[in-house]
Length: 510
Image (spheres, helix red, strand yellow):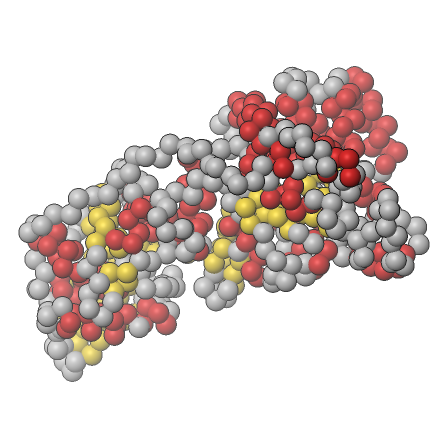
């Protein structure tokens, strides 16, 4: 007796189709499971056996061979429990009804309950694209499954619901959720809370408007972390495609908050500086997304930036440049998305008071150099905006006047992003910071005065080609905030200010 059912698996961010075959033949009782399974998949034999018995069904006392195809892809996780269970019941004649139109995913408990699994959203997208009509998923994953409306997603709590639906005794209503309008997020923090720091606020506004990376340098207590934590309040709303991409990453990582269908707020990830390179970039025995990918379409905030492990910092090079992170392990290579804004904060020296107007720095020149050298030139060159955050004077701190609110700043950011969406329509580029070199040449049109200023600055400051491109992109964003088609001299002048701190701090004489 032979039967096969459809299922799905996930490797990296991509799902793949799976066929679970079951053959029951005469011979000594034995239950073999093949198809390159990992330890968790192999354990499904015991879960399925106990579940069949505890559901008062008959487990075949025969030679049972289950193959999870394709056999050349490693199968991981408990997602195959349900399809193995269904295949055995079908092969043994205990399940009546046609299963060809269905796919099955889910983990089984020993009493037939169906538990939630990771990666449901990318699996459903693959099933839809492969022509599968309906997919049984765990009830726990119902909200996640309700995102798609062009495939029947059938949420089930136990094996009896699956069997009744297949036999036609009791049909399950597919889950659909049409309510995916952008909700207005209420933040407990606001830029109006920040006293002074007009230059830093302006730099973060430009970062948000163009998707630029930003490095803030300043003494302890100047407000670097306070500013960074308020950045999400001025970021543009996510498009549906961005929500779907981000939710796929969180689905695979098992990080979708309970009661959430779609991740509709831009992520803000703030890993501690003790984080390992693997936790930051992703990996592990079972390759999972790291902090870089969990910040996809959002912000990765790295406080105390020099204190991060050098390998962790250097792992940022490719994601910043390419918007992806490649992870290679013995089990294979995986590519995760990492379209991030990286916001970094650091002190100017080990004690933190170098350049402070009232407090004396006690660090030696050698100590300052060692501290700053923890950030390599290539990483520093990849950060678009460098801004100094200075201590706020008492008069500004004690001022009762409310500063400009996040809502007002966000309106300017949204307006600038609207220009960019129109400019890059159909290209897959979402903001100025992600422009290709050719796009930078086509869209960053300089006035004669602006071109002359940039030429003089390039030669005098000894800029790299990457720094040249970044200044053009920053100037393009500043021009967008001014609703200007061309980049004028004052746009270039402001952009150049955001690339000067590396010469102040990293070129210090001993």
